[in-house]
Length: 250
Image (cartoon, rainbow, N blue to C red; front, side, top):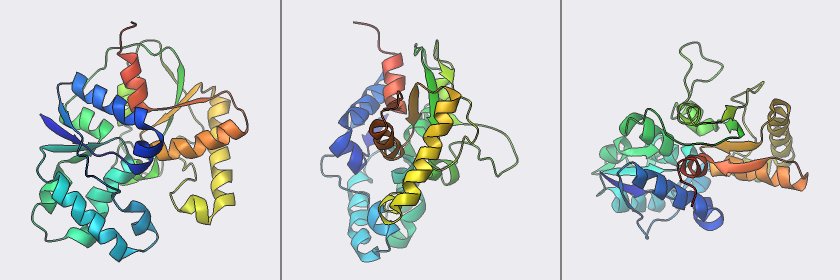
């Protein structure tokens, strides 16, 4: 199947290896991956600060660019949620918009729900702490949240836990926000930092060696705090872990 890779701005500019790992991973599962070079920001930062008219042309460009592809996949819950849950305000009634929403997926959502990946064969002998980003958890429902009663599930953990040698950290508050929140981290810096430190402390207590998530933006926030305080925790996007786990030693 043909997959267009939707690359978040911060991955494109700061963490290109996450994009490359995502391409490798999708190709391993038989996808024909295309990376549209004309793509730009999805408009989430502008939308979050109420700049509706500045967001609209970005949403329109996204629709025009990605409408032709069979699937659109993004290694970010928040950017995916922007398209599937918040573009209504800008694109309601436009030709192709409803189809675009239905074929746009976050990476783990695509692997589990579309490709029906039941198990990834590979080895990753580390203790891994999984951070659940707010958009992925409460808008895309990539996992169950603690305030709701019902079945417990987590698509990222499902993909990780069968890797040979891996240990998953058991956290005190497994679905607490890291405090990044995009422009929130700028407008409420002190609160954002304290929330990030609380998340890292939970991982430290659980013995996390490698901190992972579906969203590199959350990891970027926590990695900055980790590096400033020289803590022995490594940060990796989920795509990097899965791709490394199934890559044979050269």
